[in-house]
Amino acid sequence: MSHCANCAPHSCAGGVLEHPPVDCPSCAAPLQEQAMSLLAEEENQRLARTAAQVEAEGYGRLTRVEETILFLKKMGCHKIGLAFCTGLWREAHELTKILEYHGFEVCSAICKNGCHPKRDLGLSDQETVRGCADEVMCNPIAQALVLNEARTDFNLLLGLCVGHDTLILKYLEGPASVLAVKDRVTGHNPLAPIYQAQGYYRKKLYPPRED
Image 1 (cartoon, rainbow, N blue to C red):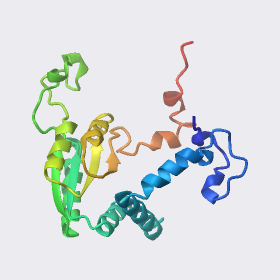
Image 2: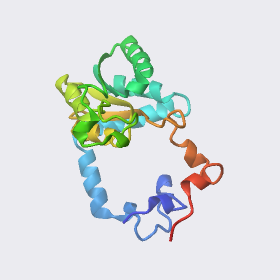
Image 3: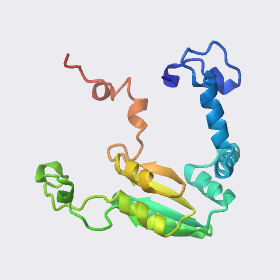
Image 4: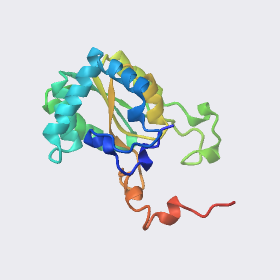
């Protein structure tokens, strides 16, 4: 089992493996051979090459939105799918205008499409945000089906909740990327608590254990 997050040297990033740990995936020949074999497939090759080119051109200079636009253009995409949370409608609206300005056609799907109540999930009133099981549930599977039906070239996820993003990624047929994730407390900056894990957020992230 790999433990890359606990490896201090990260010598693999330098191209030379020096004192790799026993579970280093870089030393797992069958795994690496399989990965390179899959990478050789045409679509995977295009995605990987384009991603590397965008990384080089935008490194430390372009924002995520700008890099996304550059990536989509280099990939030759035209119809873009946008799956977004209703709480980020304004952001989705502005993003759509930006993408259309750059020549893309945008098919968008909101999370609440279908108007299905949360009671359909078997939830009680107490298990909902507003204390009513008639509250409309998020419908990520339908979002995926809408974008699949539109035959989008590429899909962007904007602000979907934990788990809802899991479901849409499970059912999307086309390639996808996450532009931003949901974090209501930090203004959609989920790394903020990580940066403060040994400071202000320590008690929240490392609460006393009940042994």
